[in-house]
Length: 78
Length: 462
Image (cartoon, rainbow over all chains, first blue to last red; front, side):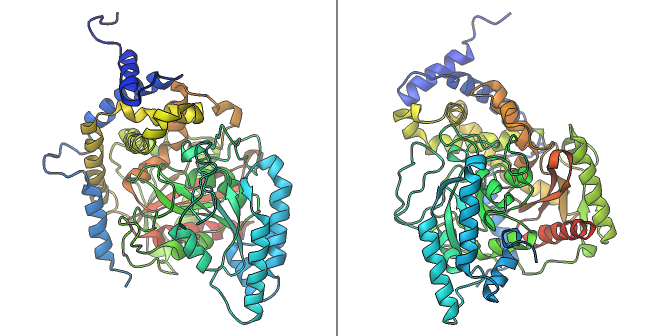
């Protein structure tokens, strides 16, 4: 049984589209947004890829910094 | 020697330099083939025959005067419809930008011009590079030269189709979640996604700034390496492009390498029999070449495919926000439904995904690439599917199709590792299975050495 006190995710997604894009959702759009919201939680928040590491001090550009470090260790072209 | 259009890029360039064939003759052959195949393969969005013939004439005159322009002197190439050339249209496979005239030339195009390429035209692609099947609602799909009823793969569908049909000697694609390697695998050619940050993206259509890579589809590993060497290098106009030592012309010996080939878990699930067979053949070839084969203990990878999609769609959503507001009907239905996914991702979740990207690279380097030089897996779990079976419109089934086709390639996109796709021998229905070889950042030479060992062994056998 659906929980009627919870908003329907597809209705929520439709509201988000109206607010952000200032237009009504077109075919498939609200479902796509709702599905992505669910997957984002399942695979990003709940992931164990970081193996319990504390991400408090990790900057969003940690990847760019890591790859630049590796590039320096390989030596510059000039 | 074989028919000229079946030569590799390196053979073609050498034949022109040695005056065995003129650029004009080779370009005429390529144009004739492009025009003949266009009704059945739809590889091109625009065949630019007049300017190509003029450029070929100039190349021949330069050679007659003793001036060699570069390693690609007079060789006809064509590229995905997403690289700017000043004064010309860059349509991005879309209705929205189909008449957009570029004001500048992409760095990679400028570098290939300097190397002497002849530009034959703009190649078909998934609209805005969105989609691994090559579906395009506006221009129709580019078809697979090995079996036109099957997908050419995407998003660089025309690049795979034109190289695989022996129309052009190489083509640039772009890879955000597999868009070079998937069409290469579907069309039975080589595809090289360089390390994130090795190749400038200035003047290339953006899809996802955290994941986009520019690289070639080609007839051989040596051709792919040559093109990548030519387009690589620091570029002041792309601040994310790094100043790093170039890819060496010759890589390490395979007998000095340790190669991880998973025999259980994520990369072995739901494989078609033809894929299993080629994976085994590749392992045997590499063992005979003296490589040490190990079984890696890989981190859990199921989340990576969704994380890669989440980052790509959120960034693409920002790029397309204005046109998604103003001209939503001008997108294909499938592309619009994918582009809008990013709205479902709250900002903290997107930033968390980027944090994970950095931390996961460190983990993969420490746990996997510290034990081996490269990881070899299938490029796709199956042979290319029949086009009609994956035209699923804007539905939840669409996401399942996207994930199943690109699940193996997305892992190495998220990690930003250089990854080479190499085709196997002809199998069921004239199709080919492929493997991908991922190496440490900036170790394209390692992936190419392994790819060449497989390629040479298969060639000897044939």
